Length: 89
Image (tube, rainbow, N blue to C red; front, side):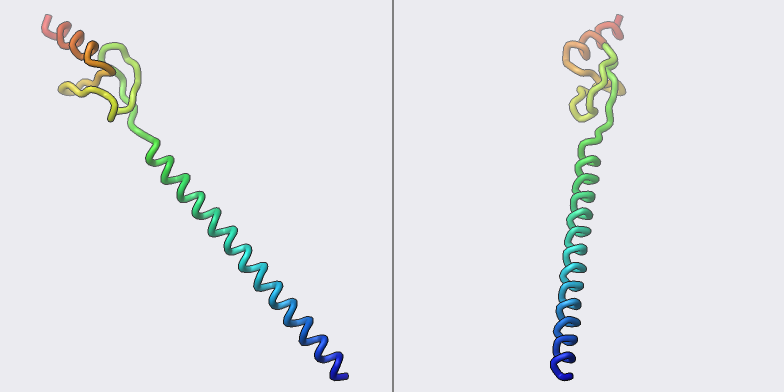
């Protein structure tokens, strides 16, 4: 009878240890997914920039790459100069 109880206790302990390992593994997987999602969201927010058209040719480019002149944005100095020249005439 005591051997049966010992076997039952060992079985319960093994089951409990397996269950804890399974829960730990699931938690680690969820943490990795959360980290990947937060990293992806951060990259998306860094990648998304305001796109603006060149006042001369209409090509869209990121605002931080554009040349600003007054209220207008340009893709290159030549277009800025041409626009200013047309504006003065």
